[in-house]
Image (cartoon, rainbow, N blue to C red; front, side, top):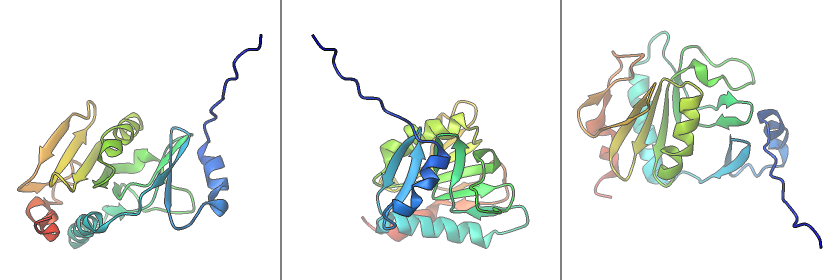
Length: 183
């Protein structure tokens, strides 16, 4: 009698993930979440419209100490994510992605990835100590704000919303989803 075979699942480290970059299809975006490579869908037009508006609103309010990034964040040895936007407490320097602890706010624009953004990614950002996490829900036309310590969701669909670290930076929710029209 033979024993049943077991399949071992091995988690990749961020270093191993980066070593694979030359063989990954450059037509996709990739993230590493708990040692698993995630192939991210190419963002569609609704995602781009909301992300462009967020970028425009943050850019209009640029000031010293406010560094808006669209690059990756290192969360731990087996997790490195590519948020749509993050506000960092320092400029990105060098080749390495900054640790999540340098992020004051992380934003994911969520159209087709809502479950992952409000599930696994939310938990990963919380565990990494990201103090504030927004999910711009394209379909629901609202922003879900999550704050440490509990990351309980607060929904905002009108008026203004400011990051806790930058209370004088105001995001106009009335115009955030306006470019979507009647979709």
